[in-house]
Amino acid sequence: MRRLLVDLLVDYYHGTTLNLGAVAGELGATYAIPILYVPVLMITHGIAFYLLLRPQKAAAPVIVGQTATS
Image 1: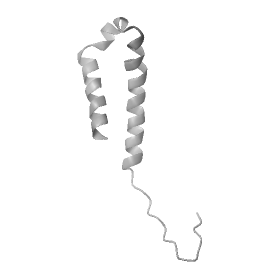
Image 2 (image 1 turned 90 degrees about the vertical axis):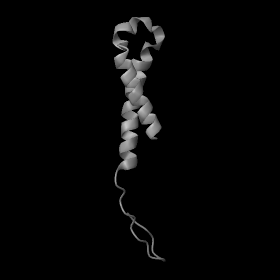
Image 3 (image 1 turned 60 degrees about the vertical axis):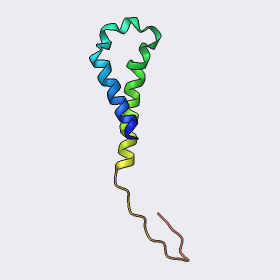
Image 4 (image 1 turned 45 degrees about the vertical axis):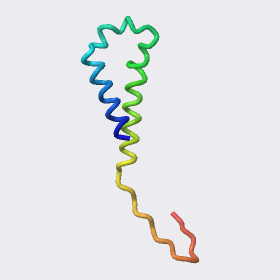
């Protein structure tokens, strides 16, 4: 999980240091990858990490013979 986050951050770093915006016209159809897919990946990874790392509610004890209701 950390590996994916580190990989995306390194890719952002490489994109900015290589001045990707200046050579965007040379990318052709692959222009959609850094412009559309990478930001979507960052957003969905951020949401997934938030959901995984948030504190979980404690489960309510169920007494034998009773049904669990919410």
